[in-house]
Image 1 (cartoon, rainbow, N blue to C red):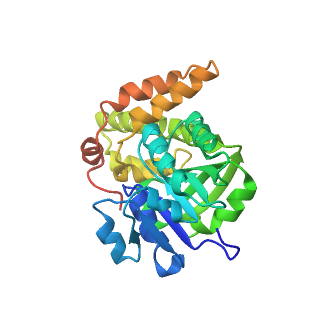
Image 2 (image 1 turned 45 degrees about the vertical axis):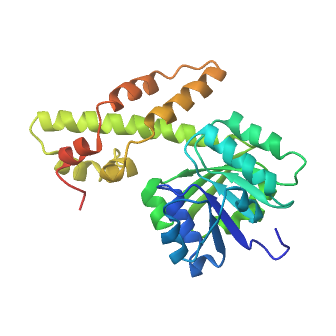
Image 3 (image 1 turned 30 degrees about the vertical axis):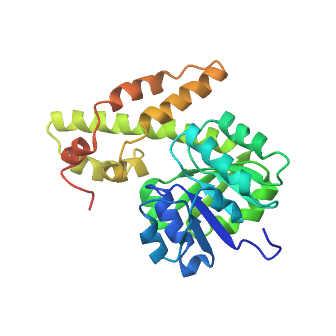
Length: 273
């Protein structure tokens, strides 16, 4: 990373979150180029000003690399390839939802390379990524976070530094427990209301004016319900490490098996106006 700031941002993983983040980072407002790992979406991104990397290792030439891939195993594989080619003074930022242990393994591998490692879990969902309104929950050295903040600016709403490396993942897991618990409670309550003769769409409008209001209640149809098994499995693993049971999470995992995107759309009769 040069003394003049961040010249390039690499994005590994161009899925539902990584794609919008890469596009936003490479717009004129972002004021920087964005290299992205090989992916079928790269043509679209190049049209927005991004440069497609020939391999994951090529991202090692960027000042900051954002890792936004699905699993812990993917994070370890991608990070190893990036670190092998990264320059001293650069930073690798783990934006995937993984365990703190995985973050610490990446940091250990980065030892001696001069590459800083942060975990910066993303909250706000696909809509937040598309609208540049992601909230980051960050773990790692605060001085490193201050140095790489410009890489986040085009697509973030807020940044919260929660503590040492892995703390961002703790924050994301707590967020996920609230998120999936709210979804199951809202769907159950709305189904009850419908069964008792009141339309869920009308109920929601009423609840959004009271203490039950939440972003989850307002945006339920825009949610994909894709990762609840992984999110809750991570929560159980992390809770087991400190000897804590998660009875509500166990219930949420069971109830989520019966909640679908189509079912929620049918429940409310279309998106919230």
